[in-house]
Length: 207
Image 1 (cartoon, one colour):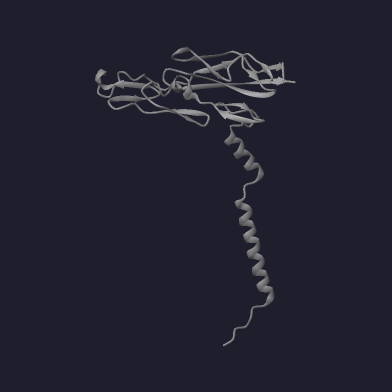
Image 2 (spheres, one colour):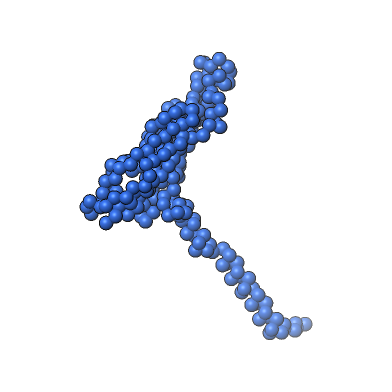
């Protein structure tokens, strides 16, 4: 028994619907230029205002490079724990066997504790206390002294609500020779509980 062929308009309509649906699906799967730009900016450490994010240093025009906090004082982590550098930050590891605590609050030998869980040694409210507040002297603008750029100086201080004044590290360091253009400087400080505070400033070298 032969089948009656479908009218041409039905076939063409079905093909058109399938084509539109396929194109819509394909276009939906392709990220928009704005989404791609935002993802790239986040990945490269560039902030929404055009500078480098805290935890990154360098120039957004060239590259924002991650600061390795672990390279300084074990990243503020306890000496018995490891420090793992992460994008824009770092993570402290756990304490070794027979110790309680962690890399942030410290490691305490269970044999030296008055209580079984070493609660007498753990700092009270350590998780609630904020990170050190880091302040800088502000953005710097200098004229290029040569094709390499110019040296720029700045200051940074840090104060913790529990530990008081804390040492500060900056990358690049004050007195470095900066290239022509804008460079983001990240300054950071740790408190005794391993919490990290940050601040940034911009060094602009004009031609």
